[in-house]
Image 1 (cartoon, rainbow, N blue to C red):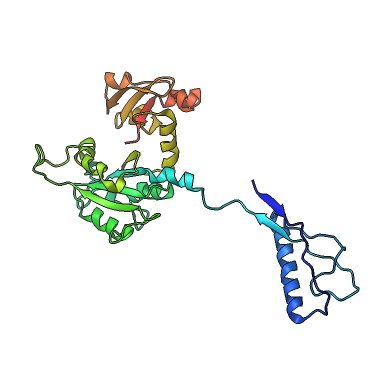
Image 2: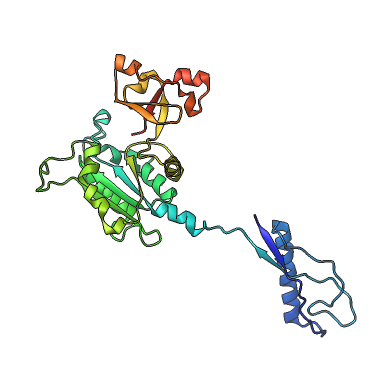
Length: 305
C-alpha cells in the first residue's frame, strides 16, 4: 500500500516583493501540486491554510499556501528477496528434435529452428518465456541438423558477451559431442540422455547458486510463467514436477500420459500408449479444474514435453 508522510514543520518565508525567479518557483510548485492531485498521488494536495505568507507574496496580503508533503510510492522494482528466487533457477532447452512430421520444413534445419511469425523461430517461444519469467541462466542442447538453429541463437541472443541479468545470466549452446568415457562415442540417445550427458556441467562453480532446473522442449508453442511453476514445485517439496495439460482421445497417443492421485502425485506414466494401454490411462481430469463436461471430453493428462 502507498503511504504518506506529511511534513508538519513550516519553513520561515521572508516577506519581500515577488521577483521573477520567485514567481517562476511558485508557479512550478503550484503546477506540481495540481498535477499530483490530478494523478491521484496520496498526500499531494493543496492546503487552504491562510496562517502564513506564501513565498514571493506581497507584505500584508493574505493568500493560500502550498502545504509541503513527502510521498512514498510503491517501488516499481521487486524486492531483492523476490529476485533471488529467479537467480537460483536454470533452464535447459532441448533443441535437437529432427521434426520428421514437418518435413520438408526440417530438411535443412532442426524442428526448433522452423520459422514462425516472420523473423522468429519455434525456439524463441521457450526463450521468451524464460526471459519474461526472469530466468536468465539458459542452456540449449542441440544435435540434429543444428546449423540453422545455432546461427539464429548466435545472432538473436548475442553469444559474444552473453545476455546479462545482474551480471550472472547467460545463454549457451551445448552441442552433442563424443567423449572418451564408456559409451561416449554415441550421440544423444534421447532427451533424457542429452541431459544426463551434461550432468557434470550442473556441478560447475559458475552455477553454484542453482537449486531448481527447468527442462523445456524447444519446439512447443505456448505462453507460460515458469516461476509460478517453480514456486508450486517448491511449495509441494516434490522431487520432480511435470507440467501437464488435459487432452482428448484423438491426440492422447501422441503424448506421454500420466495418472495422478487426489494430491497431484504421479503414480503412473506411459509414453505414447495405444489401444488397451491408452484406455488404461483414463483419469478424472476434474482434479485439474475442469468442469464435468470438459473432463468427459478430455479424460487424459498429457505431459507438456
